[in-house]
Image (cartoon, rainbow, N blue to C red):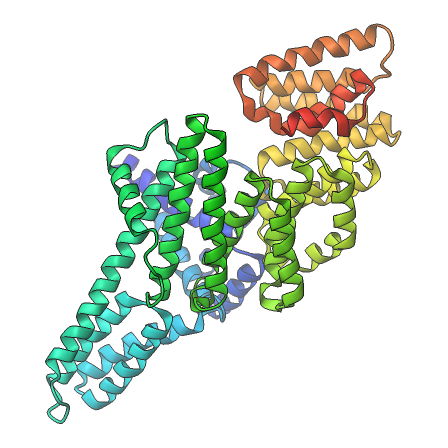
Length: 529
């Protein structure tokens, strides 16, 4: 019994931990304001729990330690009390989020409120007033293209019409309207589901699509040229996504069969439908991104990622130009969050490091990212900054690379992807060595080596990498060169087992440059293939 209670409590604590970790500083402040009415000593426990977990997150400790950490604090009572506190705090945070203006789109709020009003007015037998709210809500549901809400409103309409003697009972019209809504729901849901199946299949394809997926692909080929005009915005959107996922799956099948020309053709077709969808949701289907901005972000990032796969740098450049010309302040964030990121990725992938540095300078990325950091997730912000680090580092501009590295390392560690933090720490050391602050660089290597021995004794790759770095930092003369080469050769066994370790490409390029005497930009090419 106690064990089960502990497990349930831990699950609640995990959900609370994840929720608090996801909050922005602004949302945390709003929650504190929202809770100002709590003045009793007992109620203050919820605030203390919120503060305790917030502090725990900043320490970057593993979430598995949270239950024992809370228990050891002796602030929150036994497991049962802690369980109840966590559940109540979770509900209060969600209440705060819902009450914050702008969190939920205004049309959604109006529609949700309409359902509450309809329910109240109907059971108060205020049928005329209820009918008016239903009509307004139906118009709103049509505008938002929310057929499921529309279906419920049509059912309410049928119930109210039966009770209003002065309203004609138009059964045929109501049945026709209901049938259209049901058909739209069925077709939209089926298209959405098929699209998701194709997407999932493209990630785990072997050589041929399994029979159920092949059946979907055959059906899509038949309706590929069907007109999209007249479809509801949501169905229109998912039809285009379905076609995009179809061609992405086809490219995955072709890649497994080593049909390079077919892979390129399929990816080009996927890009065509992505572009059509971007145009659609920016124009006729704009209601979708007004209600669900993530739809636009998803389409935009898929388009940019496909351009990168096709090595279509011009496609990324043209899209960026259209954003600059549009000068739409609401959409400007996408330019910095997505387009700048993929533009830098493409320049680095194609070994255009000098051009990447020029781009960063011309776009004033340091200032513009700083202004918009509250609108960009921590992970994406640091990914963009890391692209800037790579650009300057691989272009041998170590002083500016160091400035960008500090922007990454100055953030609390829990806000960074572990691999990004590790690489940035090593590049920080290399930059210090390159700008002739060797004594600090060497000290940091020793500190880092001790830390990994203590915290991650089984991380053989990091141990071997730091040992190679230690010798590479020395003047490459006589026996030191042979020792550096020997330790560098040891790293190859790790790459044979795990190709993902090539993400350390900039570090490896520097090690190779110390041995060969070539520039880092020359050495990185073999890792950028």
